[in-house]
Amino acid sequence: MKKTFKKIASQLHLWLGVSSGLVVFIVALTGSILVFEDELEPVIYSRFYVVEAPNGQSALPLDNLRATVANAYPKQRITRIAIEPDLNRTVIFGLVKGKKEKDVFSVAVNPYTAEIADTRRENDSFFHVVLQLHRYLCLEDTGKAITGVSCVLFIVIMITGLVLWWPNRKQTKQRLTIKWDAKFKRLNWDLHAVFGFYVLPFTFLIALTGLVWSYKWVNSMIFLTFDGKPQQKREAPANVSSTGTSTSVVLARIFTETNRQLAYPGRIQVAIPESDSLSITISKENETASVDNVVDFLYFDQTDGTLISKRLYDNETTGMKVRRLVLPIHSGSIWGWPTKVLALIVALITATLPVTGVVIWVGRKFKKEKKVTRKSPAVPRPAVRTGATVS
Image (cartoon, rainbow, N blue to C red; front, side, top):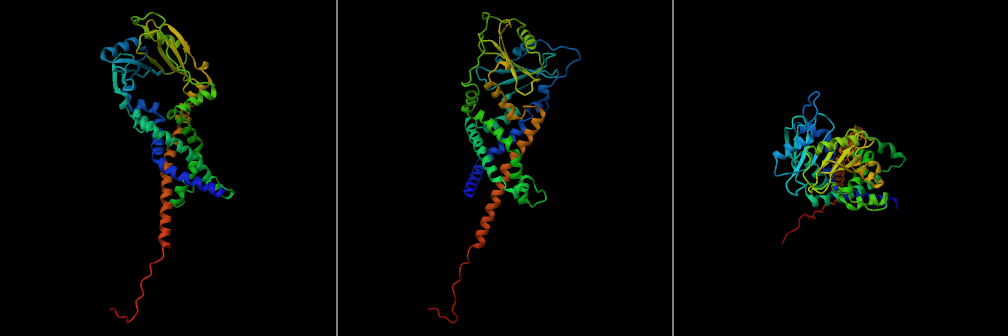
């Protein structure tokens, strides 16, 4: 019974691994690149993100910066503004034409001079392409379906791999250590089995959280499990004041009030709705929180900058708090640098598993073919009788 179970596990592990190996390799490799996206972006695109902060000079009001962008690109609509807490960072405006929210044109502005430092189309940026490859294989809905199925298969592969790895008493040391001075075949097996075992808990968690983006029902299960009801749709409330021309310092008022209400360092995102009747949404990430992705929301009137309502993290449902942990767990950012380094190592090792697995499979297949060739009986040659006459 035990041997039959292991044989089934072996076949599942093999053929599911062969069928999804390439996708797992791509997703794991791109995932390792995305781990330090926030840290690498300002380095790769320093002109876009970094400015020289003058000593003692305060940043100009956000309204001045918005006016610069609006004058430079009158045919496009400003939909968002990103403000970093660091003094040497640009303020980034997101613009779209019409209702094409996916085709975002970003403008980086020097907050001290109101000069445009750089521009780019987000769809063309390096990390956006890597993210599209990671989630959709750059194939949109088709790619999303492929990565989703591959993620499920990979979870099964990990479970069957653990079954195959599980040692008896005599094998424990061999299954937990890599024999670095062994021949290639043994070393490759160790790299696959031993490394695979050590990263399995982390890889399993990463794959499990990855299903949230692939399947809506997985996302819904979080809220049904922890809240007992589906996720509630969140929308910006309506403006309190009558619709009209906003004051020239409305963003400055909003920015000041945001920092007064949420007096901690963190990235601020301003979402400006297309409709004049809806309020402006402000989100601020709390960098002093014990875990990543702790965000508070404030809603302000577009016309005069009056605070309309709050949606604070402390008041969120358990389901929403758990949902907010999904991204930090998946990306490794949950506890900052230590978990990011761990996520990088895990992702790189995971990317090697399909490669070492294929090498094991090819080696075994070649060995079987070689044995069959050796055991093939020789074809008997016809006997020739001496002195026979051919008529």
